[in-house]
Image (cartoon, rainbow, N blue to C red; front, side, top):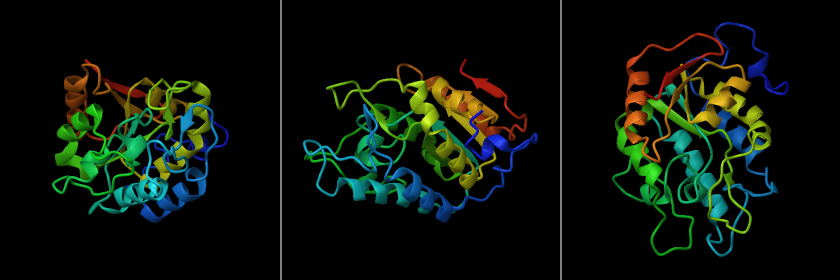
Length: 246
C-alpha cells in the first residue's frame, strides 16, 4: 500500500473511486499539475515533457499533450472500465501521447479518436500492439479509458527507441498518479493488462481483473479476456484479482 495515495486509505469493500462518472476537467488538471512537468527520470522518456530533437518535431510536446486531452474529452459517455497497461511503447504512446495508440491511428480519418503526428518522420509511426488493441476494442472504446501504470517510456541506455520492463521503483513513483486517475475516471471495473499493471492495482489496494497483454502471441487471450469483462458484472471484491489469461 502506498501511504501517499488517497485511494489506498479507503477502508471499505468498494472504494470511493467507483462513482460511475468521469470528471474530465479533474483528469486534465491532474495531468497538467502532476505529469506534464515530471521529467528528468533516468532512462524514462516523458512524452508530455521530453523532446528528442532527432525524432520529434519542435512542437511535439504540446502536440502530445493536446492528443491526450482530446482523448479525455472526445467521448459521449463515461467509461465503464479503466484499463491499465504497463508503459508507453517506443512506436505508440511515446509519439502519440495516447496509451496503446499510435500516431498513425490518430491521423487516420476513420479512427474513432483524432490527433496529430509528433514525430519528424514522413510517415507517422505505427505500433503492433496498438493495432491489435484497437482492432478488438474499437466497438467498445467509449466504455473504456486506457492509462499506463508508468506513463513514461522506459528504454535501455543509449537506445532511446528500445523498450524495457519498468523497475519497481518507477512503478511506485507513479502509484499516486494512478490512484488519482482511478478516482477521476470513476470506472466500475479495473482491468490490468500485464503483471506490472496488476501489481500497481494491488499496491493501491484495488481489486482488478487481469488480462494477457496482446503482444507476443497474446492477442487471442487478450480479446477473450476483455470480452468477458465487458459481458460481466463489476467485481466488488476489494483487493482481489480475476484472471482471464487462459
